[in-house]
Length: 458
Ligand SMILES: [Zn+2]
Image 1: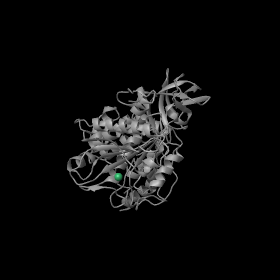
Image 2 (image 1 turned 135 degrees about the horizontal axis):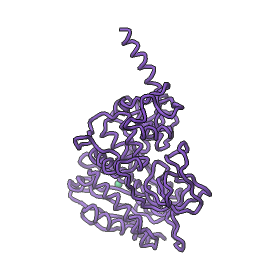
Image 3 (image 1 turned 90 degrees about the vertical axis):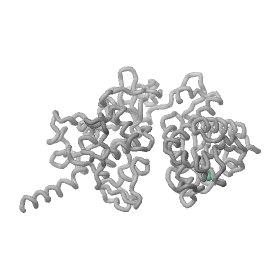
Image 4 (image 1 turned 180 degrees about the horizontal axis):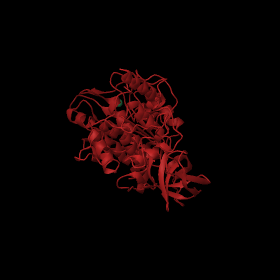
């Protein structure tokens, strides 16, 4: 009896401390240098991304809770840690990870349950972990567990289980979560460390430290002088994994600029794209077969955002959550952002038999009419090629967001939500991936037609 009481007291002592105290020593009592996850746990510990108990234990075999996962991801991506009230009924402002949970929810990395709860003490299974990591690191995973598992395995972040499966239903222990997170952050830790360095940027700081991890807690492994061109592989929050000659590692994106080809005055990084997801909040838009337009178009807009995030363009969404916006507010957001291109995304409804995609521009008394029509044509062409819906063409539309905007502006109707065939496409995450890519490519096609060099962005 006494032993049990003692065990409970010890557990109570350790549990609340496990994520709040950072140990000063360089390793944990229960993670020896021979531990299979030593390298990765040490890497995360060096960057204060994982912590242990006050007396120096990491508990590598302990199951990761949803709250702990949010905290580790939040520290890795430098999300806003300030404890605060959250959108979830069961995460109060005093909960240790309340800031990270709300920030990760804002960034669409984690979601709660239908009843409004987050269940921070529930375990994270491996499938959920794969989805969280895929969202946190912007992997294209099609919104499915199997897609997320594949995203991790193809990158050498996870080798899968001995039987060849991913083990999605198994609980995630702290050692495994650490291994996967460390490998996502630094590809050199992966099973087959290769990466595509597909973008080029230029150093704008007079001297820029390249670090081994995504925070100033990590040591500098080199430094780059102003004007140095670097190749970029991927982002970790606001940090980018870059390479220049034999120097490679992570740098803060604030000290890099889009590469400017001398002689090319058309600088993409000075162009701002505003994506407008129609409807929202109290206004569901069109409804059909259980789908609401506001949800479909928001999801598609966020997918476009993910693509723009990897480009040199500046971008802004009029809404990133399910909120109501008046039409004038949408215009104000675009004008405040000094937008160069405005794309509003909608879905249609009519009589159930009408079907297909169409894109509108405003054809009367507007200095941007020619550009608006060009943009509409490029997006419509890509949408039809990728989405395979009936081509209803490019049309003149006297819509508020087109008529009142002071920049090239279009409104695209992805398909008819009340038509059975179109609805099935709109309901499919992979179809929406394709639609988002079509909108992004349409924007690139537009810039290409305007004389900008976008050749390496496709
Ligand atoms: Zn609409």
